[in-house]
Amino acid sequence: MQFIPQSISDVFVIEPKVHGDHRGYFVETFRQDKFEAAVGYKINFVQDNESKSLKGVLRGLHFQLAPHAQSKLVRVIEGSVLDVAVDIRKGSPTFGQHVAVELSGDNKKQMFIPRGFAHGFVVLTDTATFAYKVDNYSSPECDRGLAFDDKALNINWQLDSQSLLLSEKDTKQPLLAELSDCFDYDINYYA
Image 1: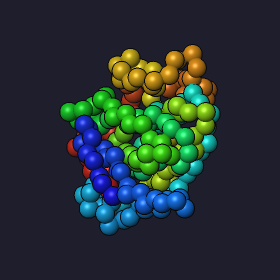
Image 2: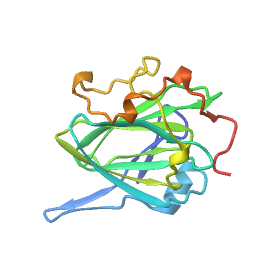
Image 3: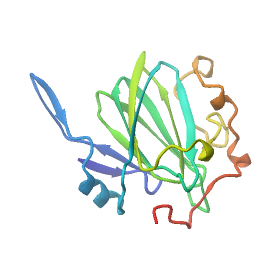
Image 4: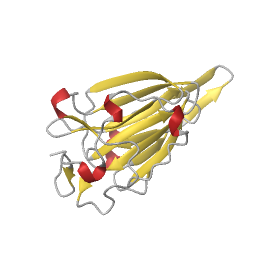
């Protein structure tokens, strides 16, 4: 398992070792000791989630505020998505910047999105099955979002905006400049 730091500190792409032969494949998708050694702190995933979506479905950009802030370890089981993490830690040298990585059932890559980031993805294939672990329980009262199409974020979602399928909630999220609920770069949200 290889942990590859991204252009924004604390975000990692994980490339697991795939063992394959004529029968199929085996891949270790998570190992606590290697994960904690790579990220540099203890993490306790408490909930697994899975979604299946059609091509053009864009889910995000989502995050949860403290005390229910969440880190996510995301991967695609089938299909392909463009996965995006946006730094929303006020005071961060990379505030408002993003990391975008194609995750697929074929490449088996995963992305770790720490607390303090908004997260979203768009489906690039006919369908995609998306799975992720979170280190805090979902909390509707702490649930927040960020406009996926905020020009200040400059995210290339790789699909024509007319072909995107969004929830009503995701069409009404605030711009980064309007975001009153953010994280503070100097606070340790893992303490």
